[in-house]
Amino acid sequence: MKFLERTLGQVCLTDLETFPVLTLTGPRQSGKSTLLQRLLPTWRYVNLEEPHMLEFAQEDPLGFIANYDHEVIIDEIQRAPKLLSQIQATVDKDRVPGRFAVTGSHNLLLLDHVSQSLAGRTAIRHLLPLSYIELQDAGGATATLEEHLLRGGYPLVHDAPEAATTWLDSYAQTYVERDVRSIRNISDLNAFRRFLRLCAGRASQLLDLTGIGNDAGLSHNTVKSWMDILETGFIAFRFEPYFKNFSKRIIKSPKIYFYDTGLLCRILDIRSPNDLTLSPFRGAVFENWCVVESLKAFYNRGERPRAFFWRDQTFEVDILLQLSADQLMAIECKSSATPLAEFIKAPLKLKKIVTDSDLEPAVVYGGAETQVRSTGAFYSWRTLGKKIDMELGSLP
Image 1 (tube, helix red, strand yellow):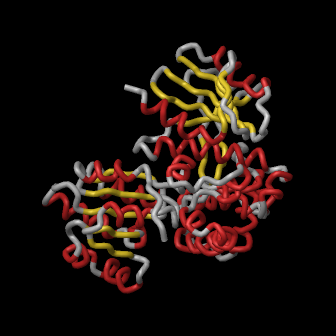
Image 2 (cartoon, rainbow, N blue to C red):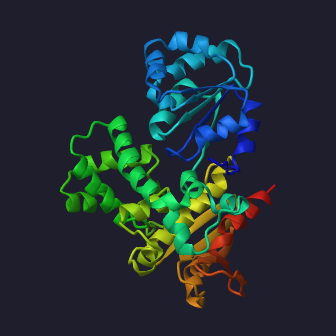
Image 3 (cartoon, rainbow, N blue to C red):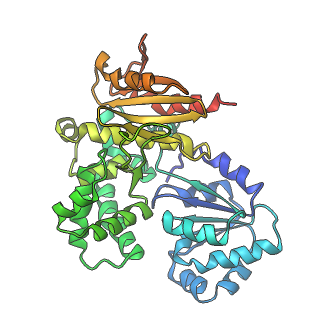
């Protein structure tokens, strides 16, 4: 398999010059272990997906770390969480930087263990599927917007594009269901699949747990628990609203998005570019991609995302980026290939409301040409990641 360079790589190397432990989380098959093995070719590698290694780590964490106590990559560490306490004891005896690099395909579950065991001892980074910038740099960018949204960003999809549909189908069926079982004991997987499809159909919308429960025939507590599973397994996430210093009219409910549009399209049974072009979900899938691409711009620089949406009782802005303490960027996402003047109305309206920050109104649309107009910039979808990265890089 060919390797696609990951922007986060240099951040990880810098972390290992400072911290004893690097913790790298992200979805299954997002490239975590491949990245670390390429960055650290002389380090030993242990995969806890291998039964004999998992048994050793679970039954004798002290002996395991005694064998692997320096310059070792431990893959899928959430499968043996007791190792984290042992790593803590080991690094406390010798805080030399660059001793352990651990990966995990679970998010909140793993970070809970990290917060208990490795606070102050580890840098925590998130590797999501490939950004459009990374694909462009590798010469793997797709020709059309529909092809890109349909394919998503998982490295294996771009390594063998002819098998993309089969691979994503398998991922949706195998990895998702396996993670469901490993995170929580769910007896009725068919009910969970229905729940997953309902969530996919609501991507880019406000998260209404009660509505999903009513449609799925599930209790509110079950839906809440299953949403936690999607977040823990890096399948979907809550996107929070921006409501700093504004009136009570602001909507404070989060929205739901999926980490990868290729997977989202498979769950929605969108299987070809033509299907996507004609789909009523086209706009939602595009908005979903814009939000995740924005998150990747922050994560790949080693920064916590400062990305939100704005919504009150009268209008909504899809993405609001907090670039600095007094600098904002309001982005409206439109899948249309034609940039219409009306697209920027909501960001311009927000600019009049936000008086304590410099707000740049903008539109990201499905066409090829970036246009700078008197009202604000209309960015081609191909330039979104580079625009955000440039803005973040220009900050002091």
